[in-house]
Amino acid sequence: QVQLVESGGGLVQAGDSLRLSCALSGLTFSDYAMGWFRQAPGKEREFVAATSWSGGDTAYADSVKGRFTISRDNAKNTVYLQMNSLKPEDTAVYFCAARYFGGAATREKAYDYWGQGTQVTVSS
Image 1 (cartoon, rainbow, N blue to C red):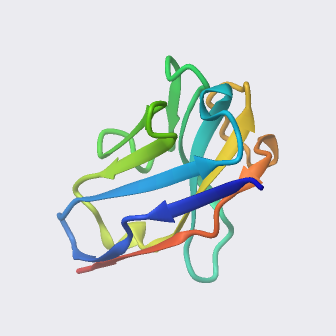
Image 2 (image 1 turned 180 degrees about the vertical axis):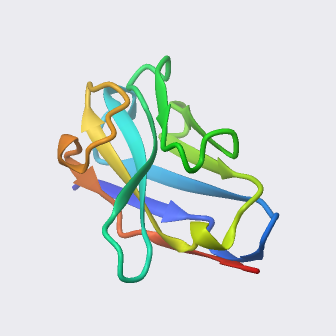
Image 3 (image 1 turned 45 degrees about the vertical axis):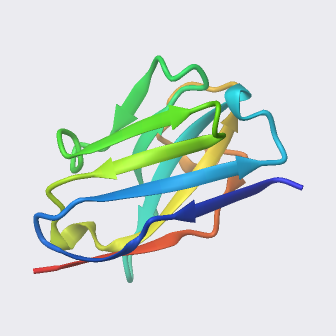
């Protein structure tokens, strides 16, 4: 059974940092590219960041470049999203997703498996 479980969300103030984690089970983690997406209230889900299966390639949405960093630890079957200098507009439910042997894809449809999401709320 494939499971992606996100954690690390919470309520923070503008300018604070959070690190999200996503643990993958039921698959060979090192075979999968991983991505982070987010969905704010009343908006469509959007791409945030992605890393290729090897970790050698990453991609970021323009809105988070320079503030967010995606990384992976294959020994722990976990992908991380370090979020610094958070803004109220970063408030959303954050989802991780897995893509078999892919690159750092930015499109939702490129991903095969999804987590349930973790809430991040940034107050001003």
